[in-house]
Image (cartoon, rainbow, N blue to C red; front, top):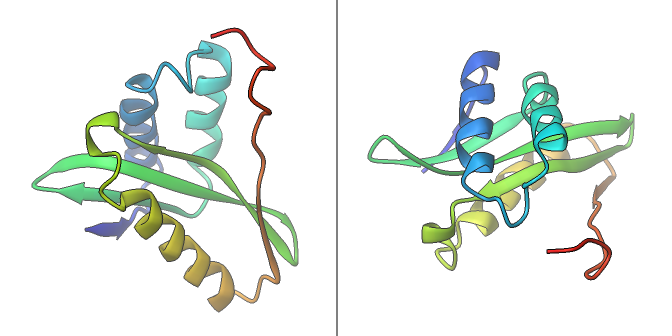
Length: 115
């Protein structure tokens, strides 16, 4: 089930827990720490089932008209369960309700980094 997380310390705890278990995507300690720290002040949702955090998403406003998916992670054992889709839909609906006109996500082209 998707929950809106308001408490900045809970956001930090959730982001750290999930990202630390995804080293294939978030293996650089400095950038992971930045994701964890910065997401504390952003709109933030988590998928939690039976007290188990399975994934989360945070949005960053980049202009009065635009938000970006700042960071998102779903634990590997829960991939292919539509958790990412539910998290995306939740933040998409939030962005529409808030009057944003654009949503973006930035990714790295495959092959740019070793690993």
